[in-house]
Image 1 (cartoon, rainbow, N blue to C red):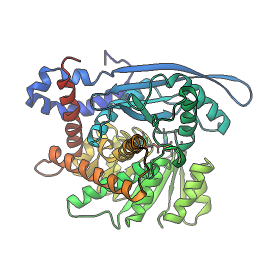
Image 2: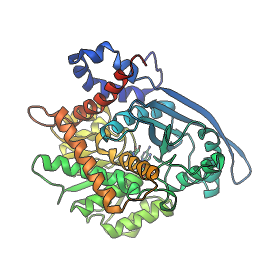
Image 3: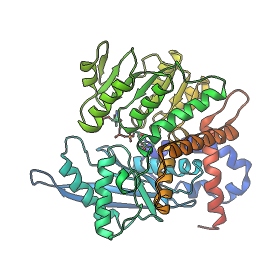
Length: 434
Ligand code: NDP
């Protein structure tokens, strides 16, 4: 904390990681002697820059943007860009750190990075978002490249933003290259990338249930958020026979005891992806639905919780409420959505607990597949990409079991951390003193 003052999210992510990996490091002296944890917790490099742009009223605006290139030991840097007013260096360092081990878990050659800006896309016109993205890329283009660093989307950065960013890169460099993922279908995007994080999260959840001889079918689910990850988590969960009764956004949650089916989800997609409106409209539209303003959804009884909004959205008390109401599985679509005390509570209660590093790795995995397709100048079918995604999520589950099996249950936190760690640590050590 003396080394990184004022970075609570980064401390939290490192603490959770070190807590589970330290016993392994102590058992394998080669890692300890090489000071591997000290080296891994320091990013390779951080770029911080001003983004100046003009709003529709002609006012000049200035934001701050970052790219945290955390670790490229096993491949070019890879990780999303987040546009949100609460973005800080601490948040991006935690995300970049997590990304390093998540990417390692996918089995693909990708290093870890994260970036973003304290820009609030809410209430901005398309033209304002475009001018902001173009201005941001004027600096970012120097630091990225298909063999250097390949950013993607995250909170506040979806298809629209990626397109503006990609278009500007192409103008600046006069090169058409796979330097971003999550691109549109007509210019190098991969099928299933939009759905991948949510679908992958549900596949991981099914793997956890199958491992104990159970399934997702018939389970009642609470999904937080109504953005990219939440929508496709809800879609796949419903498709697999589960009943999704809650979705939310930053203004509150809607509770639909009848279940959010494909038709109702189409309304949410239009609401959030096209109209960029509030989730409360869902309660006005469908019968029997209640809207709970400014509340988190974790008191609604459920079998499965899919936190898919943001970090630290499940406090210790929320975790206890979920456990009290009999939750069987918690599968994290968002990054670090559970406070450390909440994770401990889930593990203690024997809940099937799929941490973000493992459960939401499907997004970056398909981003990796997008990079492969771009390099080959090919486009794979939806079935082929989905099949590869399923296999990758299954393999990640296997790795978690290999390193996380205890007498009584699988500790997926420990399993994912150790499995992700080994590959990165061995690469760093092979390079010598770097
Ligand atoms: P989106 O911007 O598409 O959606 C975010 C959702 O979360 C929105 O419903 C938003 O509500 C809500 N939200 C955001 N911030 C808060 C907050 N502080 N409190 C309450 N609700 C909030 O982002 P994504 O779906 O892409 O990302 C969601 C999570 O998943 C993040 O943790 C991200 O890092 C993680 N993730 C995303 C991946 C991807 O492929 N996109 C890959 C792996 C992880 P509102 O509409 O009101 O803003």
